[in-house]
Length: 399
Ligand code: HEM
Image 1 (cartoon, rainbow, N blue to C red):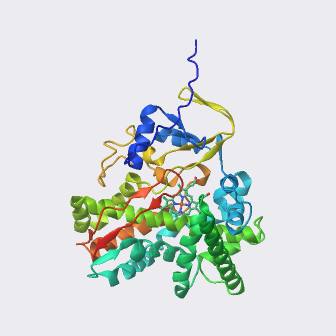
Image 2: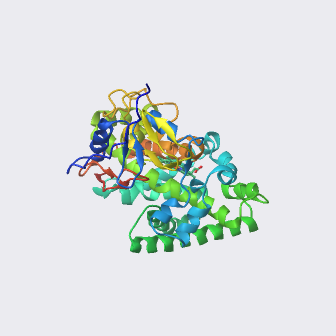
Image 3: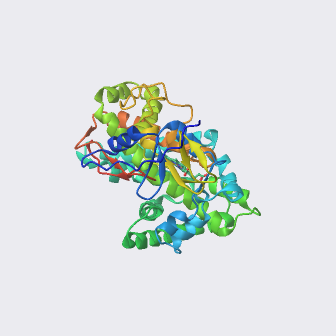
């Protein structure tokens, strides 16, 4: 007789004071799957994360997130309607294809020296400044500047550009009406800024990313709205993720002075491993939702067709089947999978992984070189939340 299928349990009650990691670990202790208040079926292991990222069983959410938030129009709605991240099948391939070559490891590696110079220029003025808001001064402006330069924005525009980006981003998740209104305003500003850049490059092509992208999409299936949305997607996907990852990684390194000292001694040897571990230990993405295309039995549970499913990155990246002593921050660990799970999997795996890793590595190297005595001036930064890009707390340092 086959075992009867089990009923998926609800998430446990949250106990006041639990960290996100403790809460998710408690949910995993109940069993491999749990159902959230919103009806999302959540898994916990890295193996289940790989299963739900497989587009033979699931598909990416399109406008469902907006509909659930009651949003049916506006600049952010239009962005989501047109961007690669919120599409599936041929539409997704049409949108992603022309970008892939520009983000290949070898192409992005050529940007390393410029990125290294850029981060050193950002850090140098703060040397000896005393207490500094690390996110405001360094972690925030840096990725926005890198991506602004990549898509061809002028140096003079990067301040306004970064403000639009971080304001618009808030509208990607569920948010109160006043935030939605501000986000829409900044999304509209970003969209018209991108339209201006496109018009300039069409009039006077240059030997840069934007001109080659425009040449690649000319006479292709993408409409003008879609072309602008893919460029805005790079900007939005590449900014707050990298900002949070930098703050969190540096916080962890400073909280483990023996590892910081190893980096100061030999940054070339340790920077890449420090970044991999920073991305694992407290991931900037909480989980990636999908919708199931058919019913499936997993671990003795029936997950019906049309279910919202997700796997927590917080637990998957501390899966003891994969990582030894997973709750320990250890930049010398050798057990990272070949593809870092924080960048997702399947057809939507992060397009900007090479860029993000170079940005993070160069920032860590510049910090240990320029401000080796840097220390936290308060608690390490906290990332909070279980879904999408997690919320970033404060981080004060002494430089
Ligand atoms: C630490 C930094 C970053 C992390 C952790 C991260 C993580 C992710 C993840 C998990 C996805 C998949 C989302 C899903 O499957 O639903 C994704 C997609 C994406 N990322 Fe990143 N990302 C980072 C930085 C960047 C940067 C710097 C760029 C800039 C180019 C970028 C561009 C994108 C794009 C365009 C997509 C959509 C890909 C698609 O839908 O085909 N990301 N990212």
